[in-house]
Image (cartoon, rainbow, N blue to C red):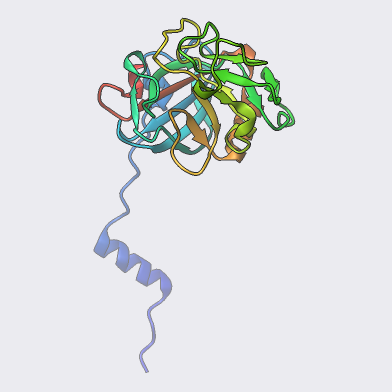
Length: 236
């Protein structure tokens, strides 16, 4: 009976036949280091889709430590049902997510803030609305109660979305210098059943981790974009 060759001999033969495994290519700089602007703080969320027609992608949150950006966490993300569009040219009610770099004014939720949250967090009540009525002076603002000039049919009754608004962060798109008709109520919130109406969404567990990670004193921003083209995230 023939004797089987030793395991070491088999490995040596394989190396001779196939050659050594190729070395992994060196990792490039982290995404925030390739961006033109990260908002000036030391925390950043990136929300990246493959292209403007994509409704899915990845959200990653980063910390700047010792002069370098370090990935802290990531999660699968959903975007608008009609994809992404440059924030400056976005139109309301188009189911598109605005690309760009934005601050995060405050957090809110139907559920209590996750333990460890220090970011400003507003509890949602029965009287809590987000006004999206273009004719209202309260356009793109949290209102409590809903003012008379803000039609319910043109606004979001926040408590009516127990899944999506269990936890959320307000995205500063069209928030500080409001342009009526550009869009209102853009948030980073918990996943619903599918694509969003223009927001960015992530699983509930990821949203809880983001809320306990965010620190207002570190100036967190969110950058929304695609991997290439006019809406490439590296432009921001």
